[in-house]
Image (cartoon, rainbow, N blue to C red; front, side, top):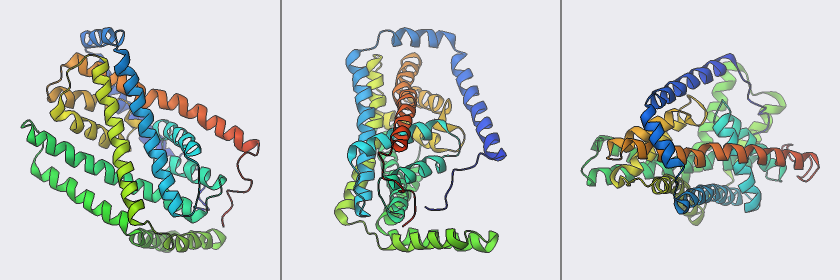
Length: 346
């Protein structure tokens, strides 16, 4: 929303990021300490199945496409019409920020907000889209985790119990209610603003008036039944496609697929990646994925090789392509391709 500037890199944020890098580095050191495993994994990486590797890249590209389409559906409900191609480019750049910059999810959210505004979306529609997309992603990941736990339970080899399943189901229901009842979210945001004013006296003045106006405008935006269904479907789709990338990576290295624990391993890794430890869960995701895959029957060397292929498609390649895309978007904005003055509030 207006008045939101670039997130400042505070000393606490630097310390948190540094600690996260240490944790990630320790996990990588533990993994790399098994030289024999990595020698075997390296050998598999030099003999990748071309079809499996291509499928992994395609699944990741499709996941990003679902994310772009999800934003389009939500922005449409707020009266903002953005093309799928430009949203795909914004998503690529957003991914690079989310995976490599400390301060998530604030930094990438501010970036997306500004990109929406440059393309003519109102302040209320932009803020609405950011919040709704985050809620939808939570619904999608929670639903996938429920399915993963149930599959593991049916497979008879689950290391989690019914209590975890119940918690995940509660998360799905609560997040779904929040998605359907946007007024509850706006009310919560208004309560947060009131509390901030009592404690700090901010936001105030012109900025405070704009924040209030944006929240009031958000109350007028609704998400119809079809749009809600499409939003949830696309959110689940983006996670499933990303999980498909992991599946294709296993195929690419010639590893047997541990079907009972595949989705659970993926879901656990995404929860770990969301923790504010280190951008993109570098090191921690690799470790958690390998450990859970092995726990469900995958051989250690093939599992490690598959995880490395998955992270190349899921982490390193998006960072490279995303920052290049971000540079292109910035250059286009300087040349006046985006509407001038779009960052100003309605």
